[in-house]
Length: 298
Ligand code: HMG
Ligand code: MG
Image (cartoon, rainbow, N blue to C red):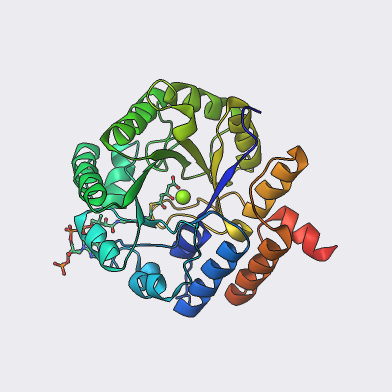
C-alpha cells in the first residue's frame, strides 16, 4: 500500500445512534465516546447539531459535547447542516464540524429539505464562518454511490460535488455509500473520478454494509491509496431518511482486516471490543460486527 498509517473516523455515536428507535440516555452516549477515544480512535464523530425535530435522537448534542472527556490529540467532529447548527456547535466549544450535501436532488430534499444548489450555498457559508473561528470542516457527499429515491448515481456528478466541497475549504471529503449498495467495481469508478477534483490523501470512504460489500470496498480503496475510513462500532448506523439502509461497516471488522496487513491505526483491539460490548449491552442489541462476535466468543 502507498501508506502504512490509516485513519479511522469512528461514526457510531452519530451515524449509529441517530438511527435508534428508542432515546439513548445521554450518559450512555458520553461513555461510548469516552471509551472509543480511550481505545485509541483518533477521530470520534460525536453527535449532530441538526434540527431536533428532524433527528430527535441527537437533540442532546450540547450536553453530550459538554460531558465527554476531550482527550488531547483526539478530534470530536459533529454534523452541522446550516448556520444555526454551526452557531450551536461553536457555543458548545466544538473544534470540528462536517457539512453533508447529497449527490442527488431527491435525497437532498428528503435529508435537508433543500435542493443541491441551495445546500451548496449553505455549506459555503458554514465553511467560511467556521474557518473564521478556527473550526475545521469536513465534507461528506451522501448518496455518492446510490440513492434510495433515484437509484444509480453518476460517479462524475458525485466527484464534482466532492471537488466543490474541497474548493470551498473542507480539509477532507468523505464519499458516502449511504445505503450500502456499492461494489468494489463502482467504488473504484467513483474514487477514480474523485481524484480529478480532490487529492487522494484528502478523500475518505464512508461505507454502509447493507449488501455486505463494505470490507471489499474498503480494500479496493486501500489499493487505490485511500487512507481514511469512516466506521462504526458494532456496525451500528443508518439514516432515518434512507429506509432499509443498514449500519456502517463495523470498526472491529476494519481493524481486524488492517491488522492482517500490519497497517497502523493506533487502536487497541481489547479496548475496542470492550466499547463494543458496552454499547450492544446498553442498547440490548446483537453485535453486527462479525469479527467482534467471533473474538468475544473465543
Ligand atoms: P427545515 O425544517 O427546512 O429548517 O430543516 P428551517 O431552516 O426551515 O427551520 C425550521 C426550524 O428548525 C426553525 O425553528 C429553525 O430554527 C430550526 P422554529 O423557528 O420553527 O422554532 N432549525 C434548527 N434547530 C436546531 N439546529 C439546527 C437547525 N436548523 C434549523 N441546525 C434542516 C432543514 C437542514 C435543519 C433539517 O432538514 C435537518 O436538520 N436535517 C438533518 C438531517 C440529518 O441529520 N440526517 C442524518 C445525517 S446525514 C447521514 O446520515 C449521511 C452521512 O452519514 C453520510 C452517508 O451515510 O452517506 C453523513
Ligand atoms: Mg452514514
